[in-house]
Length: 243
Ligand SMILES: Nc1ncnc2c1ncn2[C@@H]1O[C@H](COP(=O)(O)OP(=O)(O)O)[C@@H](O)[C@H]1O
Ligand SMILES: [Mg+2]
Image (cartoon, rainbow, N blue to C red):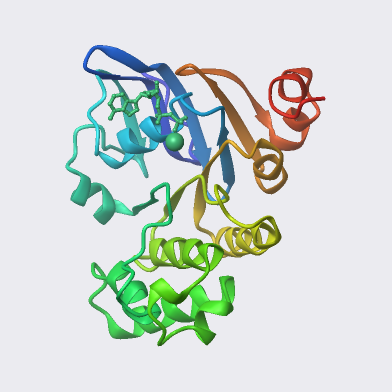
């Protein structure tokens, strides 16, 4: 008999391999995310972080391995069905609809939600996480700063009411003074019960906000553990923090 998966794991990735034209980007990655946690996946450029998020989202098909979410196998489901099951993916590069207003960008994120009251409640929650968005509501997204666009992209990801929010490099290319505001919003989202899978090459910041972390190197998990303990480990200090 197979042992039952740990009850608290919302997401369980088991032995996932991904290749592009025969070139291996992920070589058997296993990780999980406990419900309600902020889990960081850190690693250098090219380590395979984005490939893992794309495999979870159903954008790329893994060669082998399984992905379980909320008690069921989602490995071979189409991307739109994975969204419907409760996974939101905010890709790299803060993509927003530049000529649409902040309000319309947010409401586009809620397209799977038919209930008006639920949409209104989610808007309020988005403003709690990122108050600046309320002040910018009727502005076109193109008029926002890079950091504000990233807040909008993350907030849009929450508008479908996901159980799991996957964020790909939310601090990349953001003015340093805005990064704490972005992380404060992420904390706020997690505090409401949304599980967050945070992908970062900004290892220092990611380990500060996460509870648990996985370190990816050339397509393999080389370390995992309590985020604060990992931050103090020789591996992290030498490989990423230049200490
Ligand atoms: N669409 C693609 N086609 C071919 N190779 C790719 C593609 N996307 C990523 N790769 C390669 O896969 C590896 C992992 O990339 P990626 O998952 O983007 O890593 P990260 O997000 O950690 O920077 C890299 O060697 C990258 O060049
Ligand atoms: Mg990437």
